[in-house]
Length: 477
Image (cartoon, rainbow, N blue to C red; front, side, top):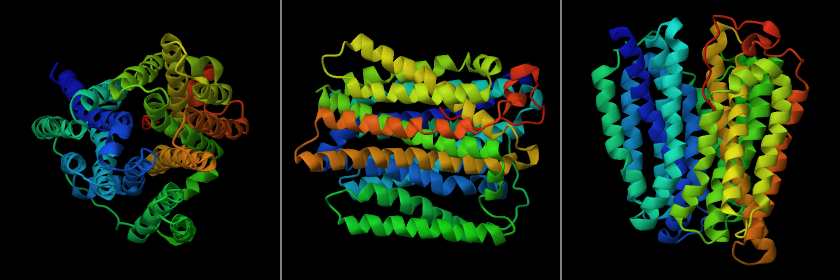
């Protein structure tokens, strides 16, 4: 009985960090217009705060595994929560756009360590026979963050102050640190190869340069050349990393895994789709508040239903892939999910709210199924020995794609308002939804190249059984 309780307690404690991180990302999206007014900037300019957090994740996730092995996973996990708390307090006291962006980047450093290190603690502390059940206990509470984030953030912003949406992380984080100290098993530091510092610097410059450059290129506060130069630095750094990775003994990101077609399709095709998905949490709250004239609380009470769809689909996704197989589900799923994004471009204040809720709910269902599939597919043909090398690559591309989605959406709004020379209008958001939906639909081309039996050993389509040595990949909803 004690073992069973322990196997349930560990993922629930780790889920505190996931809940806090996932709720925070959805809370800020709902509160962007109000924060923009207080900081005397535009809501579109605040996309820098969203991309700063996502870029920070992409920069620091690759070293999370090395940090956990070198310093001990439990110690790093507690330190990550502490960094996230400090970043949250810094966000709450920020009085300018630059200060807010830097604070979000600091939050991202903590978030980059919390999720992968927490998963590592769980895998090491849980017997293989109990791992699937433990992952279920970990994932479901984490999904509650996006569920409660929009209405809670909207309520706090509308009736109190946006500063409190960050300050509520303080008691949650302190509880998480206490629970981790009290109940998580001790983890000793392990022998580790030297950190690929050159690779860390080059990959960080590549990620931050490209995403930040695309985010600032259209901002009126900076000349366009600043954005183009930043993108150029990122592209050059990416090329230099490719050259470095070929010679390094233990490269930070093992890019040779892309030789596997199934892994390549999952990461690149999934990344292309996430560009569109990353734009949706940025565009929807802005459209409801600026285009529809709703309050943050009203907006949050609408957008949260997508999270309900995501949770509901978790219980039937395995059956869908077992019946239809990866290739067929991902091809049609990416097209249907892209259509669920495009349909947002047809919504107006006259659209019945029950219909809007139904559209968002259905979109949450489809996107959750798609994300579960591409995450599982990434590990379908990866050996157990390479799983730890594949995880940071998949996580980095996931965060970069979402960040690029925010940058793309913000850029479209900037260009659209520049063309008509006025403030944001409902039609600007409609155009943005149509464009990002087209980007997401292009992901289907990656899955069309897959063999019909790709991933069958994982989905059990055609009667095959998943290999017992396959480890669980990171959740991507």
